[in-house]
Amino acid sequence: MSKTRLDNTSEQNILNMLMESSSISTDQMSKINTTSSEIGKTKLETALELNFTDEDKILKTLSSTYSLPSIDLSKKVIDPKIKKIIDLRYIQDNLLVPFEMSGGVLKIAIADASKLGLMKNLKTMTKMEPELFAASITDINEFINRLSKQDSQKISDKNVKVEKVEKNKDELIEVGSEVIVFGNKLITEAINLGASDIHIECFRDSAQVRFRIDGILKIMDSYSKFLHENYSAVVARIKIISKLDIAERRVPQCGASTFKSENKRLPRSEEH
Image (cartoon, rainbow, N blue to C red):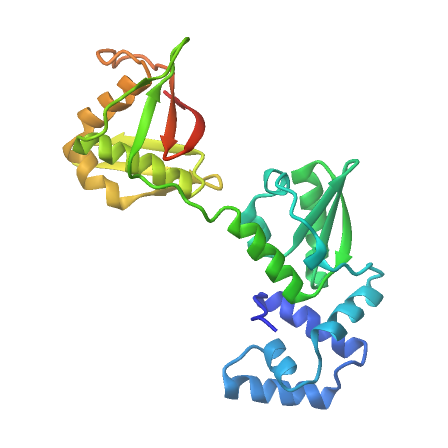
């Protein structure tokens, strides 16, 4: 079995469920508590190592206790629309698997009952009705790994071009200067980190770049020094590729550009 990758709440929930169903005795639980600290593993991992339980028993107990049909996720093909409905980080953090969508119903596999409290939030988030299934911890881990691999091909900041948006064609900008390389690296990292916004800000004695990731603005310190020393040039670069007026600094402007890396083209980004 792979590492459980469950948080403390989930593991304790499973152990409580096993004890309540008499699958694990009080004496066995005492042995688990003692041995866990000795071998440096979690209580659930210890229970599995001591053969007091196994994944099949956990799955069957979860299914019978909460009247959930069990599902074999290894046979499920990943629907690419899933990550558009629920962010991958949310899936990874909560260790639950949305594996199928149809007719306004979202089928979700869980490994422990602590996830039941998330269903109301998921319904609000997805605008779909959750239908729950029980799955093994390993199946859920492996499904999430497969889901993650679809996002693992990160673009490179080498040999990239930024295109102006025009009515009839894309006019390519030469790549080569330090400022252009800086801009390409900045955009590339933002895309690879899943940022929805890039904030470039200059102050009297410093400058900073902030990425909005999962709704939270995060300062990217590695860009501060170069940005502070080349702020005007970086802003001019952005204005040029976005077809904005370089001389205009008093009023907001809106432009757009397309970012290409190797054989990939990313959707238009808006600059203000």
